[in-house]
Image (cartoon, rainbow, N blue to C red; front, side, top):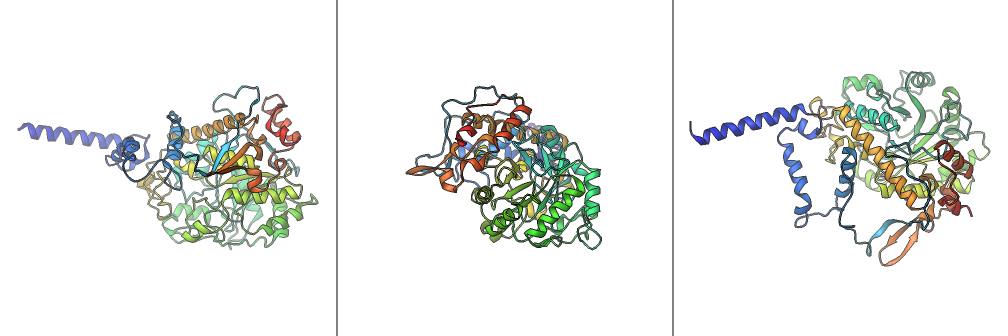
Length: 517
């Protein structure tokens, strides 16, 4: 036998062993699904920074998440070093709409909590309206509504387990509670216009079924979805390729047919009946009830705030979904041109509630590419009490931004119902990545808040952040968005209660104190 044949057989045997190893390991989704071939991706990723000096794109060019942003998420979720060397590669002298946090001369004189410790929300959810099951969320970072169906079962399970490890909440999405949601993480049950999980045989809302869902599962709050940033005005849509027999059974819909939620609710038709619906659910379950919406018609928010003014009815929280959100499939014109982006839309809603004197009685949540520290910090400075992460959480469990979510052929197994592809997601190992991502993001948000002079992110206000405008003078976000600094923080009483429960001393030099002078 010639030496060439021996070498060839040796190489073939090595490749066979590598394929077997790739299929058996659970660390890398791509290698489990694409044995051998997947190594080329990692090789290109390894030498990418050097190649990009000569060809095509830089670290900040790609969308919706740049290479630097994805690298930060991947490194954080893997527990690797997520720092960057050699300074910024942004041209700050020419940067437009670039967030700059203003460091305080005298930051709070208190140690940071241990890495991974809880960072609770500044307001008690449901307390303002006396809900029987009001509670303080233990994480300022939670997972957005992404239904089982849109995501694979293993991906939903990994996210749920990760939320359990990180003390965060997982929103179910409008596709109902599945067995994959029941692995240790607590839930926000989302009620969409299809009423999946709480509908009768004719597809109408059924209060008794909703109560049963809340009694039988770890549901901490209820979210009524009016619209979502990816496709406002269209309702939800699960492509037929993803409607498996199991999903059809959970949702109560035909198998293998596009599952389309109408763009309107049959249980209410205006702001007045919406508030009646909120109070009906809150009284029946005892749970806090909020609404999720993209921002378009400002008169809706003005009428809602006006009806809430006398205190007899009201939502416990408002979740604003920016137009740049995108875990759902939708027509290009809707994803690109319908609904306000998060910062502009959220600030308008905060202004409406602030003008009405309701900003301290409502808990504000936000979603729409907020899972990167700089955008999260800007959201908290504008008045967010907590943020939800969607696509960033998908990246933490193995998503590679292939942008095939709507086809059912997600190569990493995150957004598909293909049994072969979804085997790439091993829930237990991926859950640890999700937990590390959530806690890592919380830690960085808290560190930056302290640098800005706030003991807690809730205490940040619009004076903590400014925006670069190229050669023009930087503009504070209070000027850009017209928000009074008082509207962007909880009340002093809420902050003092937070510090007491969080085992922090009251901070007289807290950033919120200067906002209230």
